[in-house]
Image (cartoon, rainbow, N blue to C red):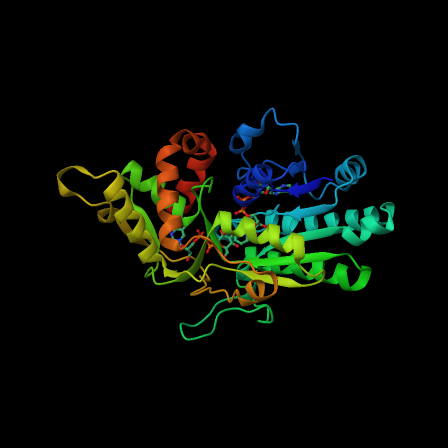
Amino acid sequence: MTLLVTGGAGFIGANFVLDWLVGSQEPIVNLDKLTYAGNPDTLISLQSDARHTLVQGDIGDSRLVDGLLAQYRPRAIINFAAESHVDRSIHGPAEFMQTNVIGTFNLLESVRAYLPTLSGAEQDAFRFLHVSTDEVYGTLESEDPPFTEVTPYAPNSPYSASKAASDHLVRAWHHTYGLPVLTTNCSNNYGPYHFPEKLIPLVIHNALAGKPLPVYGDGMQVRDWLYVKDHCSAIRRVLEAGKPGETYNVGGWNERANIDVVKTICGLLDQFRPLPQGSLHSDLITFVKDRPGHDRRYAIDARRIERELGWRPADTFETGIRKTVQWYLDNQAWVQGVTSGAYRNWVSRQYGA
Ligand code: NAD
Ligand code: DAU
């Protein structure tokens, strides 16, 4: 038995691969294009582990994917591969359409051709798990109930529109061709190996360097934060027991305003790395121009996955963010490896000098 994981050198995919191989002998073939967001260093501990095979390539490369499916005959595919950063999608949406929409389409077509090569029992057991986001549901007002699995799609950014399109393709390939698909729509993740273009690792990275902590607009936008290891456990559970054709919302019941998240990180850094002469990390907070089309609030109603599959997050925001800040302090070599020239180009494009 083998899993094909796509995008497994990125933030969530790599956490999934690392966690999987702690608890299972089942091998993983990891197909990753190694874009700026994919980092083989994250997987360095698996370098001589025969259970992990990293293949550099594109989910949209049908010939490559068909070859991998024929060679490894996976019993499931978990599709993490995507362009994932909203701000980058605003500057340049083309890559998002290419990978998230066309790439997913090509991958589904490869799976459609692969399924009939399996025995009846293997076909019954096969699953295609598509990892998606709560952003497909659009934005909430402060008094609105959280997103459920039947909330209508209303994506607002090029990123979320491309993810919504991919979710629709996955759904259609189930209804039309009978592909045994599962879709998860998860809220904001944070934790180890998070690329420092996203809010939490960016704030930790800048604070340690004594640089401004950029907060968009009034900082009162709300996100629902989930520790990445809890997202990985939810994916394992959906893979194991999810009903083909169904979608599962995944979230941590941890709504926080951005400004409060930033202040929490500053408070932890004040404890772990106090600044001289009574200065505070929060002195670095700088309000900057808002993100165009910025969604005000996301919140996930995760009752379905809890009721039907018995999944619950293990970490609260308080326990998860403490571990995360500590991880970044302990893993500065990893951070230095990913904050290379290309990263600096992005920072100056997005935030100016
Ligand atoms: P990430 O940007 O850190 O990693 C994406 C990975 O996909 C990288 O390793 C990259 O090299 C790879 N990739 C990109 N294009 C590819 C292609 N064409 N073919 C093969 N590999 C390709 O993203 P992430 O934060 O780990 O997110 C993983 C998935 O989870 C995405 O689908 C994202 O939409 C979804 N998601 C993310 C969050 C979050 O908070 N980060 C929340 C919910 C859902
Ligand atoms: O909700 C799930 C989504 O969460 C995933 O689908 C995306 O892949 C993931 O990137 C994330 O999207 P967000 O846009 O919510 O994450 P980001 O870390 O970019 O921003 C979090 C919030 O912080 C958001 O309201 C914008 C704000 N922000 C972000 C950055 C980078 C700032 O205020 N300043 C910043 O510099």
